[in-house]
Length: 273
Image (cartoon, rainbow, N blue to C red; front, side, top):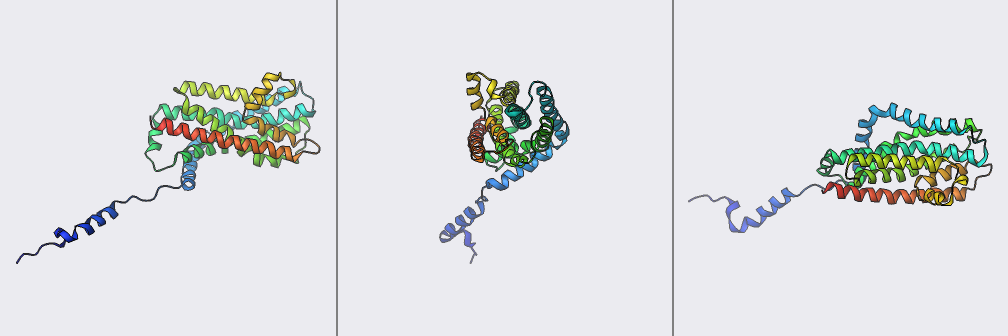
């Protein structure tokens, strides 16, 4: 009498298949927030080496512009525009210019293939990298704003509004910079587009809007950083209209959501090619 294993019996085939199927089940997909935090920490640690020169260049550039403008601007609304625009320019230098270069080089070098193999949502990659780069702008933006207020004699009492201006303007500009870098066919073109975007933020954000032609004012309204500049500039007045400040911040936030969504779509498009 031979002993037959139970696994080979016809009636036991279904339980064996179910056992194999249960063992082959994959784990749950990575959630957005833990993935975003992981990408953010990784990007922050990689970019930490370049923190000091990056902060120095961005801050020195904005402070130098304010010193130059001090010779032609005395005070009033023009001084508010110069200080607010110079402070947001620090954010534009990093979030728009450097992020466009980073994603352009990442696409050209095949770095997107590495992220595509990880169980990380595309939005986590874009948001994590954008948040890491935007984090470097906080000290430079605060230093630029304080220096500008002292230089032009503006009040320092409402600088706390930078807590909202920096992340909202950073989100809008980071999304735009990431989209430019991911959609550009070559890294050189991504660098060029980032430089042009930063130049637009410089010319349209720092220069007083009252002295611009009507066509240039329309182009200024299309720039995402404009609403962050306007919100910050309004707080320098003797009696700020907080409804308009909140309105500008809300527009800046909506533009940030749209630009980051476009950057996420551009990441998916570039990763599958």
